Length: 416
Image (tube, rainbow, N blue to C red; front, side, top):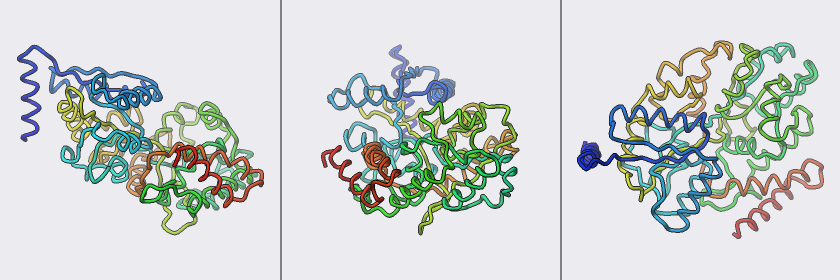
């Protein structure tokens, strides 16, 4: 109550001075993050008409470059109140720029957010962000193709990756369709595999964990097995990848929930798709759940209207159940605030997916995602590993030697 009164006091003082509190927000993707923030701002303004919002839409790379440049310069002006940061980069910002982001530990009830999201924005026991969209992964599959291949849906549940490859060969033989599409030099699937077993490129102390990581060794083996089996259609870039399933060339897609909109864009395929838990690694502790991507909101410690910004995020992103229903229906955004998942939109059958309640399933899988520490150099580790994959595919390197070389390259890159 004291905090609410403090924000109201700030607003009343500004009103008495004829000055509107302005909250500036930096984010990317006009059809997703920007549009969702506009909806959030309208809802807050309905309660606090004296607050203004400036939602600045930039490319993701531009947001990151501008934020890095200002924070590195030590200048405390020119920053927004709120910025969107991709989850993989959260620790890089928090550790590189201590004191730059507001400590939100006591401002929110973080037990109401998905634990794996809270962990990645926690540093030294303090929480610095407000969890936003989840990248909970799913196995999207074509019901008609699997039926044509003579494979019953019951055979697809909670399987291993080796079983997935085995089934993929059957699908290819019976239907002529690839099991999946992918760029063999992209690290997205590698991150799904690692997190499904609770592992990452770094150990619990933040040190590189590539050469001797048994989960990574198994993941690289699967990358090569998928490549050698011929079940994956090789594509390059986002557009070719999306075209592969929109054109009906593949029987399934394994990725984050955020792909729903792209799959549903091909309306002629309505009713032909379903979603299942992803396959798991054949390792102790591995589960049929993981994550890919996602981002969260952060408040800049030295921004002019920090307290109003925090109140805004608390009122909308930690209290407004209806807000989460609307962004799920209109944008396909699966939030990580748990109380919202009991809302009606999450239970609505989707005719495109054969009337499956897909968001109810996704929230169930979200709870099973193993929390991991992404560290501060995820993309650098990705690049080092993908750099040796050509020699893994052609047999010039053993997996053990490739991981050794990848770790060496990674250490050289970051100057460790």
